[in-house]
Image (tube, rainbow, N blue to C red; front, top):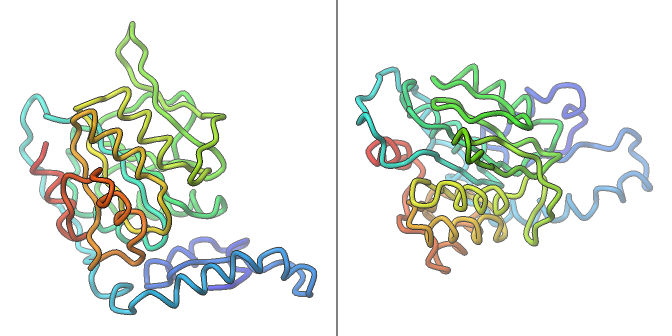
Length: 267
């Protein structure tokens, strides 16, 4: 989609993405040749990506029913955090995963989704209205709480840090730049999760182009955490998951619709 709606109605753009749009680019305010040049590279890249996507991957595979049943969890969960990374095609998959998680999930979820900065708050509000968990854009110095979902802001890279005295884990904005992608960097977030939570972390890498998240997922894997990559059949763009699988970073390769129940059964 190439539209000016992103500036005034980001909710409409989110609806389009969840209805099957591959991506979105904001139209320049003045459609003249000089302004079009500001977005030509991004537009050409997205058109090339879209040309490779099979239409059946965009619609019809993601169920939107909500899990209204609480789950009985062990008093001491095997894992303490879930971190999810996604890019092209990821918004709908994330929505589907969160819809199928129970409202009494005992651990926090951190999400880094490559999305324009102007849409991240609309994305979080949409999820908060739809899913059984509390969803919000992550704030600096915020303490992680079980049963909450934190969406990385798209003008910062975020990491987590643990206070050794209180044992509490906080979200921190990072000035570090990462090789594959920034704002938000999936690698940066997953690397910090691996360092803080070690074998108590679950890492999930979803659809997207490129290699962001591969290094981070591998770090979780090497720390003996649980790692999952979305399979080729359900990935809109099988770039990031494929790279993670080839690197040996993903312990499990699952279709999108199996990820939520697998997460619940792992806790």
